[in-house]
Image 1: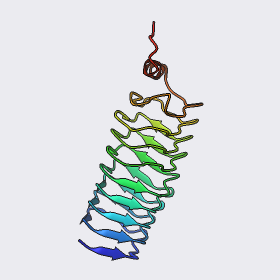
Image 2: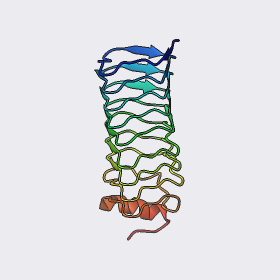
Image 3: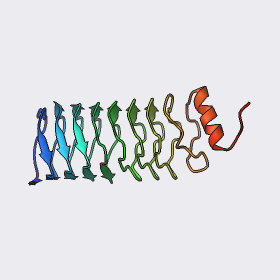
Image 4: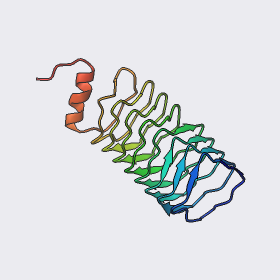
Length: 191
């Protein structure tokens, strides 16, 4: 377990790197690239991942505090069990991968993209996903209390966890079959 402060990995290729239990403080990982980098039980505080491009990498049970993911693109990455607090996560693009059991409580996710991402039991309490594109995502079991989805595109996502009385959904774009799920959540009988 290392305590790494002021690390400058700007633009480096992180392919195949592995870290377990390490702490990264006030570092610059902007524009990093890589495939199959693995971080397990790591802590990131004040670290910049701006414009990072990572594929098939894993951040398992990691903690991110005051980190910036401005314009980052994450493809088929796993963040299972990770926690984000006071982070800059927009604009962020996530394609595929597994973000199950992630805590995004109170995070500003306006305009972000989560395409085909597994978000099972993610905690989005008080998160703002206005104008976000969350397409084909598995949101089953998600905690959504007081979250805001105004103008979001949710086409193809599992909406079974949505309680329309507890989330703001004005202007949300969904498919016809998803409307049935939301109507049933209200206790309405269809047909």
